[in-house]
Length: 203
Image 1 (cartoon, one colour):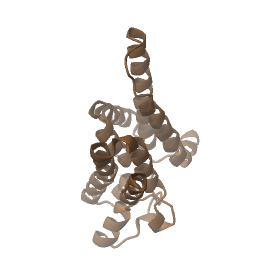
Image 2: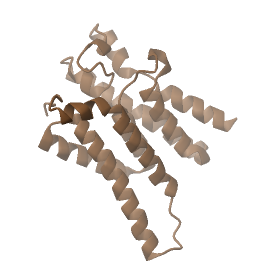
Image 3: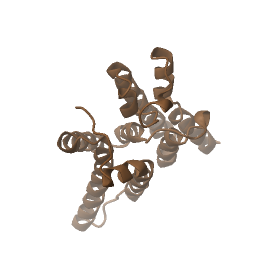
C-alpha cells in the first residue's frame, strides 16, 4: 500500500505542467506553440515574461523536492522510486498526452531533497557552463554529468580508504538513470548543437 501511495503521489506531483498553466492564465498563450514547444522555464522565458519564467522554475523545482522530501521522512525505503517517478511525471505528464518538459528543474529539486552539496554543485556547474557557452541544454547535460561523476569518484575514494564504510550505491545508480533521461529529453538540442542551430540563452 505504501509503495502505491508513494508512486502515485510522486508521479502526480511531478506531472503538474506549471509552465503551461501559468502562461495560459497570465499570458493567454499556449507555451507549446512558442519557441521549442517545451513547457519548461527556458521556453517560458521566450514569452518575454521573466517573472513567469522564475515562478515556473521555482514550482518545477518544488515538484521534484516536495514528494522526495516527504518520502524521505515517512517512507525512506522508497526514496529513489519517488525521485524517479516525480522526474518521469514531469517528462511524461498524463494531462498533456505525456509530452512534458526536459526535467532539469525537477531534477534540481530532487537533488535538493537528496543532497544539498550535489544540488549546489549542479547549480554552480550550470551557471559556469552557461556563462561560457550560452547554451541551456549544454549546461544541463554537463551539470548532470558532473554530479554523476563526482558521486562515483567520491564513493570510489571512500571505499578505497575504508572498505567497511557503508556507501549508498543506489544514489549513483539513480543519478546515472537521470543523466540518461536528461540526454534523452535533450536529444533534439544535441542535434541542434552538432548542426550549430541551437538557440543561445541571454544571461
